[in-house]
Image (cartoon, rainbow, N blue to C red; front, top):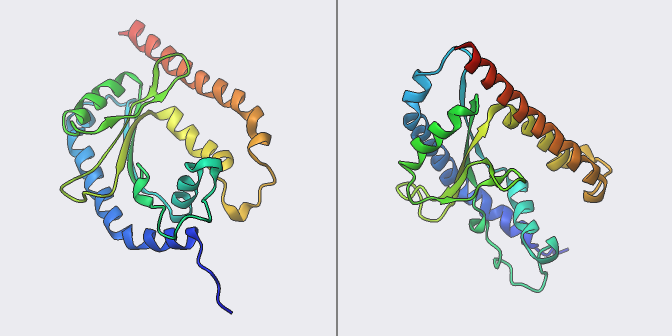
Length: 214
């Protein structure tokens, strides 16, 4: 029996061909980020934090992400195999810089922007007309001219919370068989907003405390 290939099959094949190149980009991007922020890291006070995390987007996450970008959230079966490409994704390789307190975020942002001058800002909004997380996308052209990458500068408390929230709600493992869909998680959006605001309030309160004590 001949089993027909699907768009997902083609994309998975493409992914594993790209993996070595994606890994080289991640290594380069992390090294550049560490070098750019070395002076900030060395000047941190005992209670301050600067942690750099890198990641290669997993295969199924990449396929799902590309599928979500299509009309109706699905691949058109009438399109020729190979029509869709993972190279359209902006974040196959990525670095996240976690900082505490938030005052250090601006310093890190300026240090990285001085090097990644051609990268495009793609910030995560705070819902109030401002920026919650500075985020940039672009290519490490001395490593790859085709794969897009991103880096984020995230308040540490929010970044750690996102690790939990994304794994539990946004990107649960297919093997978990969690019986909910997007409609089921809508009530969590308000709770998520309140948690993020509480973490921001904590940082603001902490910075006021340190300012008053100095």
